[in-house]
Length: 305
Image 1 (cartoon, rainbow, N blue to C red):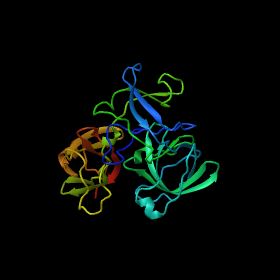
Image 2: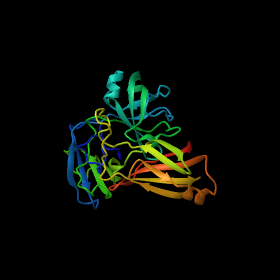
Image 3: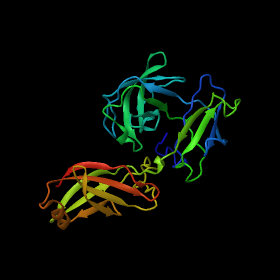
Image 4: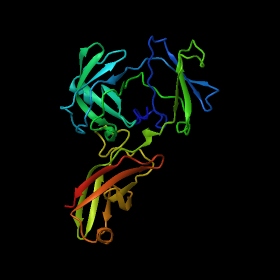
């Protein structure tokens, strides 16, 4: 799974693996090869993950507050789900990954897990698009998609910096069998380094100052954003930098660059782009990572105040 970096000590390039087998053989070997012929032991997976599939369509929902409207059912292959109180939810409990039809993962949390059938739960009181995954929401994500509970069974492959981006052949199977045995599952995968991708900025605004337009936003952070003590969340990047696209439909008419969470769209640039002053602007703001490049966009039509 290409996921955001779940904890600060994780390798942001390496992605994550969740594995399950029936019956569980006491553990699984994760083998890797760069040529699909010579395999080496990468790591052992000791705990089966709670995997399943969604049984209902899942529509997009509100961000940064409880989604009280959406509820959906999942069928899991083993293990169990349980409800938590609101304090536990906001402390980070009950986080799951759901794969959308485009191959992207949304991280969401659920407060209520009601058993409604054999190995089947209805999940409700949701927190959507967690850890910068809001752009993986769809209208809807159709039923039948992969569901993974994020707990200590979800692990990372042991990869050096730069290896994750390579297309490697992974084989996963019981230690008692040879890597060429049919019991081994083979997957060819390269990780995109999703853990290094900056989150989309928040609260994008446009304010006319004289004849220019001041654009501003609030930075988010990939790591350490839950600490309420600092005045500002940590940067989590080598440098602070942003790119701002000014758009006409899907055409970028101008890209601005800034090293702080604001920039000026000058009247000279505005007239050159549009011929007349604009009451609204379609803009997309990206934070830049030296390791990943552009992060997720906050694109919106803003009214020039």
